[in-house]
Length: 85
Image (cartoon, rainbow, N blue to C red):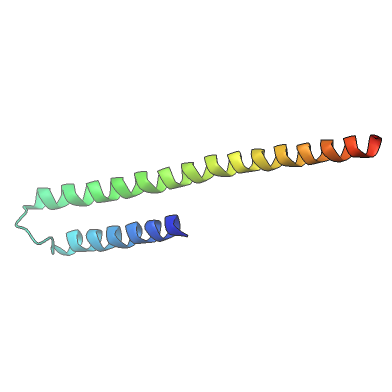
């Protein structure tokens, strides 16, 4: 539950920051190239963060599926050993 909350918080603050940069409400006196750089960095950072979240989810899902398959195989072996005795 906590990782989901962190992701939603990150997405919300990123969207708010992108909105501020686009509207020009950055709170400082940046020139147009500074605003563009801020916008590009926010977008690239958000894309990389989403990619990392997707990759980590994929790796964890694969690991959990392997652990479940190993556990099921172990239980089947224990049941087969118990029936043959």
